[in-house]
Length: 261
Image 1 (cartoon, rainbow, N blue to C red):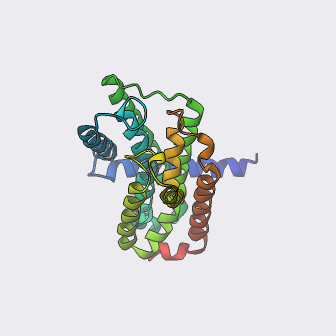
Image 2: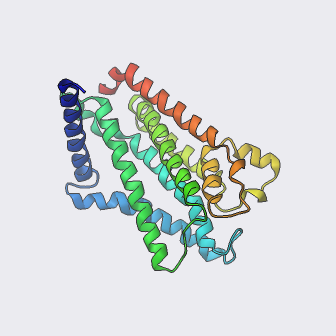
Image 3: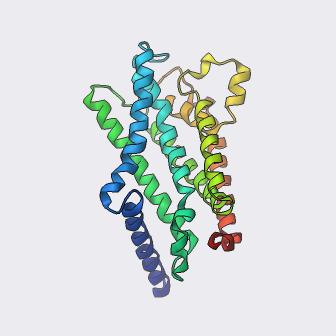
């Protein structure tokens, strides 16, 4: 590896580090304590949705714990669509930084997706710690399948987020609202509250086009033996995420001039 390439990698790392620290400090307020809101927001969402479900459901549709069942439906949403939505605002919130010649849109996008993925895993870790403190066993039967589902959710979030970043930078806050509404629809149609076998074949076929539904099925197959992991279209999830990421990167490359206006 040439010295010139090493110097460029070091410079890129320094730039990303500075943007990360600045984003953490300015996201909510003007101190690092404001960053805690970025953690508390999705965590409270997880807790509220899970709590509301448990108040009206005493018997799990699958397995023995309704808390585990609803968590396996909500966690993919937090790992995927939350980062995708926040990543979409990377250029809008950091546009003034692009006046500095050293900074490029790719720096803002890379720093934001790193931060959002870290946020998602911190939220997941705190949620698991909370369940453990309540004596709820959230350990999967198949750790490998569970890890695959979690990584697939993160990858899909990055792909959708990069594409969302380009669209939001061009169309503005209107697209942020539109993406939020789409995210709500994807969440509703992801089978969070009902097992997939409770749906008719026709409904399940429609749901199968939702990549978030596939990830929920993927994660639940790691917990419940009556969920067949081979029925999950894993290739569809990876292809959907890859195409979204590729379109986003192409948009960043060829529409970069519109990011500065």
